[in-house]
Figure 1 (spheres, rainbow, N blue to C red):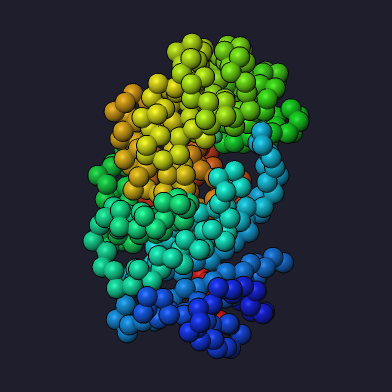
Figure 2: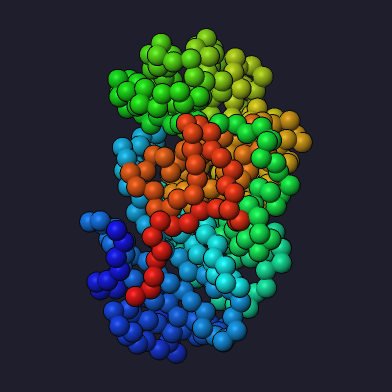
Length: 411
Ligand SMILES: [Mg+2]
């Protein structure tokens, strides 16, 4: 159960001189002048079971007739099991849910924190604070136009840009009365790749047990480290004929890639994701076409400009909405990559179903999918996606088709 109460646990420390502060019930409310626009920032604490979550509402009160306002809410998403990749272990994933209200409709978007990409809660919320006043009285007509208008404000924090962009697309499709994939002209009977299920690094025995706990899952992504993972994949392969992908998360050396790939090809691994550090494109260009299995960029392919840079260095790219800034650039990246002969995956972080749902609407455009993030959580805070092993149905509700399990109400 969700409950709201307790003392406020956050506030904006950079108060402008002409700020006014007041208390409203249990909430701390701060009124600030920002470019002659009045808005309020109220802090809250949210309890889910024994956990407490701090968050902030930013609400535009500058006009009785405002058309759009945003709020954001932070959560600590507990993972079902510790999740380890080559550069570290995560047990809890902080995330921000962005809520945009416009013409009586509510759109949702999400962005996690990520130490590798330097994304903190403070950075996310600061970026959202910066653009919130600009959305006052904005009349939504074209999400891609809005993305462009806010790009100079949000290009330093693509994760925040993603959360806002997804929420805007959610509202826009609701305005049109159809699910987003349908709005884009995609069809329910278009072929859609199944999502892999990811096995974080652990002992061979534990990884085998986790794989066997997902019977009939059609494809697994196996996280490996500098050792290459060949004996592990041999162990897993003895137990299933499912497809395998291997993700090294930048941990291999250039002179190991061909050898590891040759062994993994014998074990019917269909691709290797990000074998070398992100900036080693010159080494990757030497390897492309000389390995036994296709090589996919993840950490080397963040934003739209990276697609062309990856053409000579990889066979495929893994687009993540938070890396590139949302659905708007992701759709352009898919088109560009396909045009340049790259296969395309859309991947994810360990988001709730809010973030995952945005990627689901892209499924008919993809060669591969890695959208299992919410399935790795102990408790998903959102609902609306229907999974049958690796296959996710396209949502039928207008917009993204997801909602928070318990609405957040400002006390
Ligand atoms: Mg990866």
